[in-house]
Image (cartoon, rainbow, N blue to C red; front, side):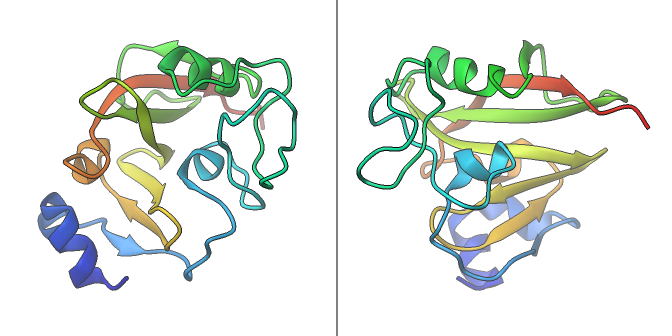
Length: 154
């Protein structure tokens, strides 16, 4: 996709000064994997085995269901915990989980710096944006659950 396509799909990006495409097209991983820091494979709760026959990953021991609690548990394997908001907190990295009208997780974005978030857009490019709400809407739903983990010291 190009910038105009993204702005058409996500109108808030049109006035987002941080918006930019930050990677090449790469269908080899998805937004959940990207938010988890994994650019090598898609993360999908297809079964409880670590690597499924479809080539997707889901953390071993985490219930493989498309529910917020399962996604929270998957991110907990990386040290994330639920927090109150997407607001920047010094010393923490944050993830926003988006759900559709049925409450099913459909997208995730990761905070990379104060006021800067990044999202993998389906099988397309990665983008940067200034707030989780800037990619909310009919496609990705609404950011409803926020997670944080401590940044490494140093």
